[in-house]
Image (cartoon, rainbow, N blue to C red):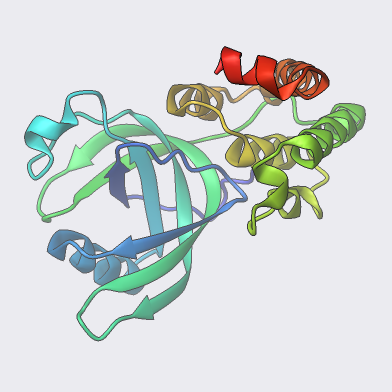
Length: 224
């Protein structure tokens, strides 16, 4: 993802289990007073919010400044709805991975100067990898008993995607991976390495799904 045009500092919004990715859209409901001010300031500023994970143990100091994971994804506020009670519904469009350089004091919410991370290995020669990933992901969605009937069909994520980085990040966003797995993939700037991990995971998930559908329900019940 291009990092030109992104400026420091950015607002930092830590959450316990949300891993955000470039070129995906994240809806958020903003209700805490400090984050309401953040939205007002962001509107008047560069329009950027950096999403990061809270580090383990955050529960003991959530309303202070708990430790946060240093690599996240910055997004631009592309939609904002002001609610009558002073709260906001917003949508962020992911732009770039970043690494926090230093935090800046002075506001009730967190801000930081960050290094916007450029990706590697995202050349045109990766077209076949992107095609393979889209094919495997489509098959996984098609046979997954819960996801295939979901109103938010994740296949919509990759319909218009072509570049390998966009395909892989959107697939990761739509897959049922653990939070720590998604964070590891966010931290990996080598697109081919991310793609190979995702292809391996999809292969494993497809094998498990196909096996579970090939055996009697009574056997599946005993496994569960």
